[in-house]
Length: 138
Image (cartoon, rainbow, N blue to C red; front, side):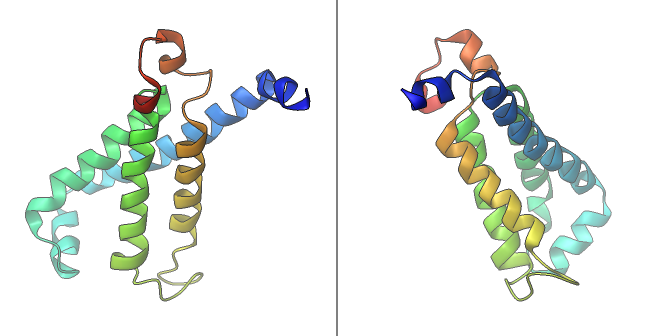
């Protein structure tokens, strides 16, 4: 009985949307800097081919936007989790949690993406309004 009331709470739906929106906006803003030509030099400096600039930037931009509106939420959060894992283990080499080159923000984003994968889009989303999108694709 408590669980049924908890699920019907509108404040909970707004909080889930806030989590999705925060993660989506962070990745959208982060992706906007990756379209700059200087990002190619940084990529090649860490051993990633220059051709990966556009796919990496688009992956963050598109999935962040999908998270924001609540379409393909679980798939988007899964892709963003992979990006966060790449940032933690490949880019920052998981060497320092805080300080210079720390991965604390990436770890928080990874945790938020995992929560979004479990929760799904919630009621404040296009997926909930459409109701025709199969649950695994939400």
